[in-house]
Length: 620
View: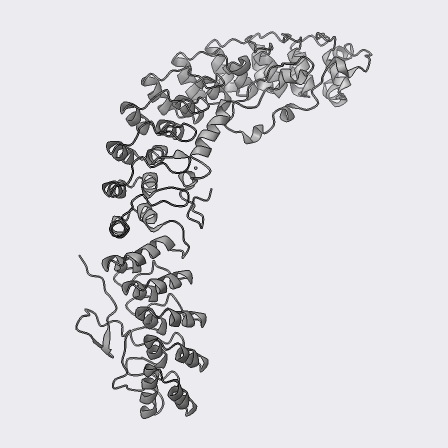
């Protein structure tokens, strides 16, 4: 192994002590036999000796007599170098006041801050930095002040330099860094400080966590020898093993386990290392954890298992390993999501195929009776929907309030899924608990292409709900002009009466939707006008929907993982309930399971460890 060059202790200029292997640098000089470069030789010699001895009065006297403050001996050592080495803080200040060059270098490139750092004089280092000393200055051989402080185990100086911009990535001409020399010298506290501050001088995670992140087994071994706690936690409760699991560093993971790390340690939200490894698809790490006793069906606070994590993230090989090892293929989250639901939501066809091969129930339901096919319909995932249908998924399964996958696809305007479902004999006349057909839903949300396609398939355009509402009426209520035109062109009954004896045109007039009537092409005006008759102004006859579909669906845009289902009317006086086609459902819950449980407090699982200053993840 190549030895690391270390700063030597000088007994005189240019002559290393017997214990040192290198002559670089002359960081602990003596003024013996000085060879002045400037000023009178005798005065210069006295000046350098006075500086080394800390004789402030003599130094000031010689300066007043005209001695050059920057005079040096043959190796380039000056008064500031001597005073810095001996820790004479007041003398250092006076020399700087008298215009001593803060970054004056010796023949080998060492400055006062190099010398003070090697000697461990933190106050001198601070004075020099405050007066403009370069914390990243390198000697001829590439030594930095930080390297020297680390080599001599001066923790306070190391910390100060890092806090003032020292770059620990700078290396010597032989490629050695402050971390390398600290590790070689087994200075565990300095190693910890360097790890914790990383390369930015900004504290992030505890030292052992950073060693795990870097897969640095040498640093981890040194830290474990001195601290003896492999399960030290960050402020968010994560152990180094969680970090190793995230990055797939099985070497550091094995080391931690050998040193007694708890393979089933549960961090915030009850997340185990196996959850993390499964989510990120770390195959070898998953194998290591399982071999060392990881609980295969460990549960998060939302009852998610590692299999849920792997399925949601699309890691089919991890899914295969977990299932073969006995993971519960039908495990449910608190909202009833099975691994198959999560694979479908992510459009992970290979994962879904693997789960189905191992006999995952194809029509498994959530607490809201949503099947995986409902999820695929909501998301518009045609490939995985086709796989489910080919594996005999029920195209007419009824979810919350009687919605079928076709209702869901129509509601989300997923035309390709609609076409697929009809190819697999989905019932176009299927009704929800209140009588809504897929055409009602498509008309209300303005899914023109879906409405057109359904009509082309021979769907009855005048079908009524339990309350007697036609697709045309719902289109009027939602101000869906394009849908209205399509329906009229296809021969719907414009004067169709609802049970309350209100035509679509009457309703539109009562709502003040004159613009809708004006938007209908002139060629349709005759049929529209025949439907308009005087009405009384009793608005209690119909509890009209005062807002469009968007208003009826609060928060829908932000609920990208939700499958919105129909909320059927409980009270006949609240008519808008009959068509409030949206709100809470199974996939919104998945959002909570995956993005909250493996989410808000472990953002590093999604954000590649964006740590905050207090060592916790900033935002899984």
